[in-house]
Picture 1 (cartoon, protein in one colour):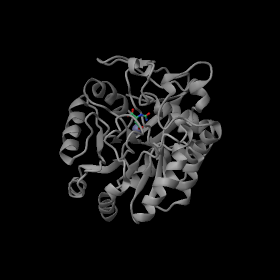
Picture 2 (spheres, rainbow, N blue to C red):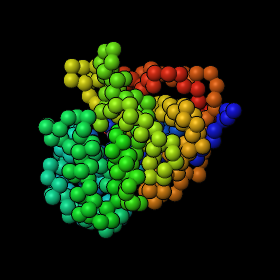
Picture 3 (cartoon, protein in one colour):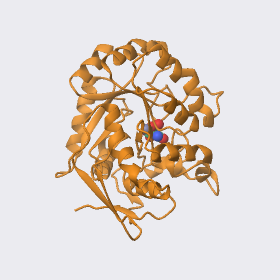
Picture 4 (cartoon, protein in one colour):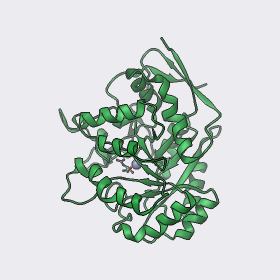
Length: 347
Ligand code: NCD
Ligand code: ZN
């Protein structure tokens, strides 16, 4: 039986760090285990320009505790007014690693996102030319479309037409939640990849709704039925090179989650590596964990893999805080609903 597991140090290809007190509270939770992360730009106001991304990067690095190392990979929030030259300059200088597309109104702080996709065509064409990846929140916002169908409809109505109209555009379908998205990514070429979150490998929609509403399991895209969760498990644990970890760890303080109109987002930074080791072991795929957390992402983003490593050991159930403290209020850590046995060695 395997009792220790050494992996190249993982990266998180989709992370919300926020700003101010929340940034200070959550950054160490990620930097403890992860070397790099793609930082989501959905602040208020959003990170739209290269200058804003540089300033946000400085705030992140200033919040990093002494002795910890972590590289934030910055993204720009795509709006209908985004200037292709500003994007190209930010990419050329190495400041940004990707651009993020939010359909307007799809999720937390997405109101400045895109309404008419024709208005961002010039930016997408420039990104295709320079090979800069587009990270896509793949849900339509049409009120007629059921929330559980919004990802699948987005593929047909928006994503596939954009990809056909923009050959060479490199796309990451973020936080996929359906077998439709898994199939679409598998059928695509090397310009198409997907991130999968920690929590979508663990919960389905019953976890949110059966036996009382569980606000800490509510995120967007919302978890779907069990068949979809199993398709995600299969994609993640199969070793397919175009699926990799993007935790979408999305902290909101408890009063904003436990609310009559609660915010979307699961906070998984604290225990993600323990949860993933448990999940991959359950599926007899511990040998595929390193690909998912540490190799497939850098390959898609054309970045070097990390030289450092982390070791997980298996033993008694792991203890982790139920909440982390923050000056704005407590932030609840994702509860997978079962004990975790793999602990990251920290010395
Ligand atoms: C994210 C957030 O809170 O910023 N929430 C979420 O449920 N995942 C936004 C997002 O990634 O959709
Ligand atoms: Zn997100």
